Structures are given as structure tokens and as C-alpha cells.
Image (cartoon, rainbow, N blue to C red; front, side, top):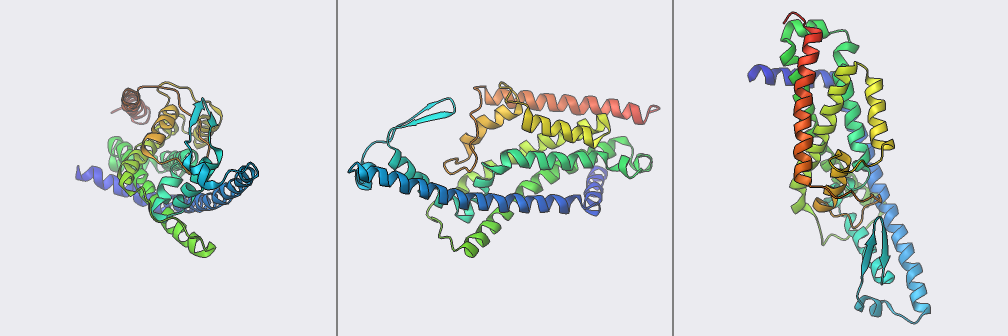
Length: 309
């Protein structure tokens, strides 16, 4: 166990020296900064829409107080909505947008907007480079002689698990810090009465799990094809071009899970609804496939690199 942990620490050291960690951190800062700006822009758009709706209601002789006293019914039909009381709806959207600018709510906001799409892509690219590191620097033979294939393979795999958790923790802290500074610079007075900190532990565990699955899968793919280009292209194609496959497709499971553990009332991205599936069974299937892939790739690549063992 100690030798395995030493191997993990060594892999993390290599990633640090290769500036992979710093690059990942910079991308997280950019992602969090963009999320804060998107929330700020979203508030202004919702305020402008509320003002327009308010003007139309006043022309019809309806005050805000009257509209708020009436019922609000939202009927969803696929990805479209039919709203019975538009003014009340827009009013609550403005309130939700102000709540979203609370720095304590920044993690919830980033994980329901840009991070849904781009964090798995960024971390997937990171893991592709980790997998190809020893081939790129021509150190594979020396690493095999020093550690053996088992320690090398699982040392890298576990370092990805560690970095997935670190990345999510970093996104949480950076998003809070950037949102706080952004509010100060822009003179924003957010609604501080509501926060989603009680949901944060579950969100943290879930987001870490998603990154681990994405990262490890594209790590394994890079080991098999021995090309970061092919793996990264496959990552972009899956995330940006392949539609939701439904069922136990990981993207579909994510689309079904996000509304259950996050508050999406002020999300800056319109995320399509997932197709109904058994979430528990779906994640069990994904995990089982992941374990099988790890076993198969480990055995196959070990035989390819160390045919005499």
C-alpha cells in the first residue's frame, strides 16, 4: 500500500512539474470567471424582461401586487413551457438571479451552467495528457524498470482520482472567491438570505464521481490508442456532437441527476431534459462497465508492454 501511495505521489509530482496542474488551475479560474460574468448578465436580462412584462401588465390595468396574488402554473411539454402568470414568473426569476449572485451559491451556479459541459472536457483533456506523459517524454521503459507495470498503471489511475477531487474542491473555492470579488468590483448587492450550502456535500461527491468516470475513461482510451489527438477528438465528439443517447448513457444520467441535487432556478444554460431511466441501475451499469474496462485495458496493455511477464 505504501509503495502504491508513493507511486501516486510521484505521478502527481510529474504532473506538477509538467505544468499540467497549473494549466488545469488556470482553466478553472477562467471557467469560474465566465460563470460569474454569465450570472451578472443573466440578472440584467431578467430585470429587462421583468420591466417589459411589467409595462404590458400595467397597460392592461394589472399591478404587480395583483399579479403576485394570483396563482402561477407552469406546464412543461418536453423542453418547452406554458406559463399562466408571466409577470409573477419573471418576478421570481429576478429574485432567483439575485440569490445566485451570493458567493456561497457560486458552486451551485457553476455546476449547473458552464461546468456541466466544459469541466468534463477540460479534465478529460488533462487525463489524456497524463496517460501519454511517459510516451511523450520517452520515459516508459525506465518507469517500467523502476516501478513495474502495476504500480505505474494504477499510480496514474489513482492520481487522476485525486486530481478529480482536487479539481472539484478548487472549482468550489475559486468560484466563491471570484464571485465575491466580482460583486465588489461591479457594485452588486446580491440576495444573501438564501444559500445552498446544505446541498454542497452531495454536489461535491457527485461532481467528483462524474469527473473520475470521464477522466479515467479517456485515460484508458489514450492508453489503448497511444494518441492524445484521437482521444481528445473523441472527447469533443462525444460531448459536443453526439446527441443524448438516452438510457444508461452517462450524459443522460447527468441530465436526470442535475435537477435533483442542484438548484437550477437561475441556471445560465438551458439544459435539455434527460430521457427517463432508472438512475441507480444506470450508475451501477456505468460503474460495472468502468471496472471491466480498467481490468481489460490493464491486462492488454501490460501484455503489450511487458510480454514476458
